[in-house]
Length: 313
Image 1 (tube, rainbow, N blue to C red):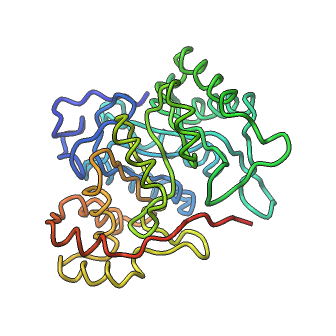
Image 2: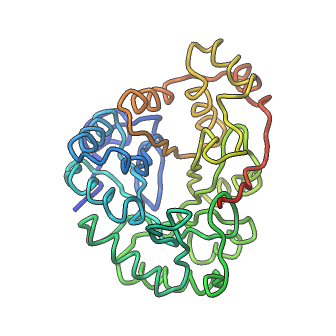
């Protein structure tokens, strides 16, 4: 079982300095720089993936984001094999989609309450956990990605009801939301929301009002695609002249500058950049050591902000 028993706010349970400093999610203390496990599916070889996850722990990462639909349980199995209870890694998963083998896109919506429950049960089994600390409900209201149609258009309150029941049963510790609208978040607040995962980056700041609400409500803001560019038409942080110029002045890469900006932009930001490369993992963690003064922040704030509402398929 993966637990969290941190002896010091400044150190992980493994004893490493916290990557990016100290944050919280679902009542758990975590490093502000975590790891998004989606790309582990690309490695296939378990030994390489487990070595990467162990390196993350050594670097002070103790917040890992996953989903049963990443490789239909493959990634969850790698996480189960890599971490020990004494590592204190907080695993966050998500529900709302299922694998779609042979389809034009790799995922299909799975929004109905019974599908959400089945997905939580599958996550528990493949992760080898009695409780998942946080589970994000991936809504299909906002891009990029899937859209719900037909019987997959489900009222948010119906979904929150099953998520709250799973929390009451002890199968999940806290509820998060992903790809949610501002109105959806406001509607969900009475249910108790631990975090929000939306597409957001230095060059894609359309959810700024939602970020402010999360800050006010002490909800963790966990941007996915924090460097943009995941879909055609989605702006990339590393393509912006303001970012590349600022990075040169700071002596870091444009990617590191984009991640550092997110950490400095709001105190409740937690990062989960994903990679299948150990060097990139180390560079992502190193972004947490970059100091941005007012001049550097102003230079990065000048990067162009555009919408990320890019449909898939």
